[in-house]
Amino acid sequence: MMRSGVAELPLHTGKVPPWLANRMRKLSKLVLKILVEEYGTKGLLERLADPVWFQAFNNLIGMDWDSSGSTTVTTGIIKEALAELDLGVMVAGGKGKSSRNTPNELEKIASKFELDPEPYVKTSRLVAKVDSVALQTGYQLYHHAFFLDEEGNWAVVQQGMNTELRLARRYHWFNEKPDVEELLNPHKGVAGVKREFALNTVDKDSKEVQKAIIEIAQEGRRVVRDLETIKALSKGYAVFYKPRDVDVREVVKRYESLGKIELNLKALEFAKELAIENYKEFLLIKGLGPGTLRALALVGELIYDVKPSWRDPVTHPIDPFKFAYAVGGKDRVPFRIEKGTYDELIRFLERLTETGNREILKRVKKISEKWKFPEEEKIPTF
Image (cartoon, rainbow, N blue to C red; front, side):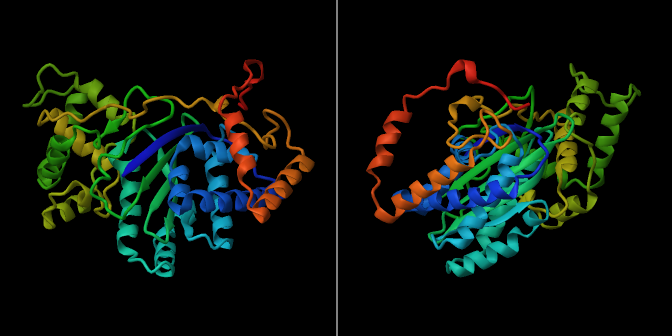
């Protein structure tokens, strides 16, 4: 199992014009069909879970390389295309209200593929909780798409928004089975803009932190008093307890930079009543949001000296100029889309799928592997 990566994208507004959206659907259907014929449904999911490949596909159909809309539009186009094609892989969820309909759609898809929907619905919820609660970098999830094939392989593409930074961060997941055991050590390679710090309770060495957070959550009213003590210290009031060699104000400021520090007492009551000991089950508690986890982690750090990881899991930045544009970009960068060129590409791929001749694609692949984007043509769209 792996979580393949993360991509950072500026927030863009605007819509895809109908003439372009129609061509995107046609081209996507052809490319997806060829991919499944060549690599199977698992191969398609592995590629969708690769942030670089996903961005390249996004550029292929004419979307911007650096737009938050590249996630929502591209995922929506793929969802529509797979719904029309009978390739053995479908998509649940999407942007906003569609993301909240993921469980219902997953049940229908799993039923169609004769799979038990329960583990996939649970996985969908847990993946969303990991990237919004267990790992916090100041982004609020608003897009969640779950890809499932008839063999039980799955992938997730979800995106969070940071309105202050005007950036979106996209998260990619992949697994060959509906097993959630490895979901708490998800990072294999992460691409994006590295932040100074991130509250990371799923870092590779976070077992002690996870255990402490669960235990603190089950202390009931005591955790409320501990949090009040910390807030008093951060405001300069004298209290009976003071952590040694710690600048309380700076620590609290770091947590507050990610959002409000607040406790959902009902969620803590659930944790205590259920006697939860497993961090995965803990994250799935109804009402456990980012603010509550921040509060619990803060109490753990300042009262019990159990410090979470503050490592942003980004390992390398994405270079947008790795991507070639076949038909141009929606915002005319790096060049405007020519309808005639787009239509010719669609006709070419249609003929290719009809004849079944893939040799020409292999030749193009050899040529493109050594191609580099000309430095003088590197122009961002913002």
